[in-house]
Length: 253
Image (cartoon, rainbow, N blue to C red; front, side):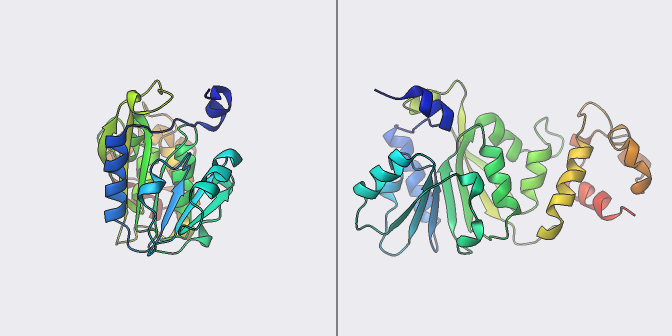
């Protein structure tokens, strides 16, 4: 019997479709150059296909029943299992070049991704299952209705794309929404320094305070701080490019 109340609390919807599981495992394995870090392994449906004597796989899960189960299931394998809250995880414990992946709890997926984004870690790639709406926001482009805070903040350091969508029927507890599997590849060129991320993030929040208003209205109390041209003032934030936002941010007095 599935403990649905506990599973709902932790946002656990386990992937059970063997075709999707194999597809995801193949993609992750072919993109691993150093080690792997899995967020929310559950019962190890994907984990078991990625165990490799060459690459250490570290997995973190908040549910001690899962971690105890995995300790027994993968005993003597090249895996390190952590019982803990991913929102409290220190990414400096991981090595640069690592591949991070996971079926993220939908209620905290954005927080997890932003925590990785602003950390000093330089992962090789990120592969995540997230709610399709969140995937669309992360992978949106300027002018798209989904282009906004999450896409801009993550695009500072990653190139993002949706690889494929996943229907509710692929999970043991069917979510009420569609899901997507996304790839995030580290940018070779740094757009802003990581030390400025929190300040830039707060600036983007201001710009998108009200999506229906133009930049002048959203930055009304701060307009003297930014020497904005007339074309920027009259535009809604979703019409601006990443470079536009960076230029405005860097021009502040």
